[in-house]
Length: 431
Picture 1: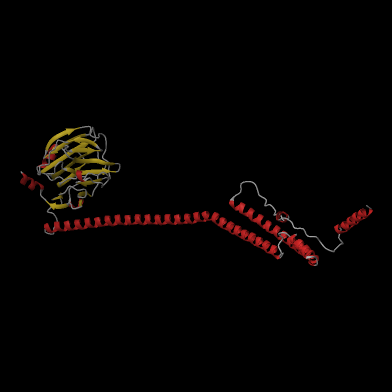
Picture 2 (picture 1 turned 180 degrees about the vertical axis):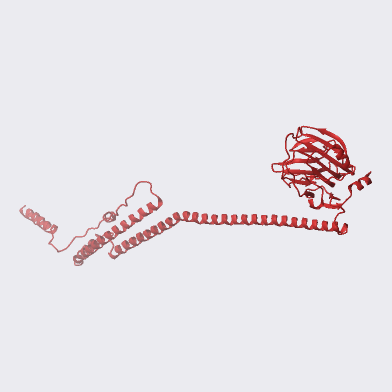
């Protein structure tokens, strides 16, 4: 019994000596599971910022987080390198004593290393690859950030370029419109100049022909001529050079011959500023001949469209607007209240053969006179009936004291012409 007790005490002392090894003598290495190794090196979590951010701000935040991660990885890598060097030293110390033991003991010590890599440099290589991967991701994110910033600025630049282009196109369009307007104006001016030149040339030729037919001499007497208006147009007309003074009464007489139908047109018209129909004698369409004074109308019982020469006289006075109408020396009509108390305004334009819508212009071809005119005279009083008879019978030559019928007082335009005539002799031929 005492022998067994002594043997137990000896074993306990021997076991206690084995559990407390001498300092710096040796280490017992024990294998660790893989999850324990990875759990010793946790990766820091990437902080996330809350709130709604723009894509550029999110990318910037991600880059900053990756940079912090790289720095932490570098620190972790340095710490792990130090740990690796320390573990390598300890491993060498573990493997040294194991080399002198029995083969069975050595095999057991080798198995205690478990899944630890035999080469510590392999761990460093893996960490280097991870670091390079993180650097590549960082560069990719920075490149993507620059691209996004460039794309965000592109629409503004594109709008500016587009606005400049549109402005240039608008200026080109305005220049083209201005050029077209200039060409239009130039064409209009050339057309008007060509028309005036043609009209002037035609008038010169007609005057030359008239001179040749007259034997290169003047009319037999200053009033021995007629104005011929052969076509119903808006450009054949005659113009009296003199104008009228202010009148409170008048007598207008003329010889005319026309066979135009319907209506002979307008033998004469007098227009003043503000009133184109100051004095007008007109037969338009199927209407009777009308006398207009200050645009007031009186119908005259005259019939002259038979192709023969007729002597026409109209008288008027501002007192009560009294008027009279004579044909071939015979009074055919009278009336009153034609523009009473209205004085005839001075300074107007007197036209033969056309009705004026404005002073001296805007003729209407449908109202043009077609035929021949002669002995157009105006007096500033109402002639007596016997005086009108004497003029119509060619027994008296009495020119108008306001507008006399003389060659140098009448101009013709647009193809109208002046011909020598003896009205009374031609009238006898019509009988």
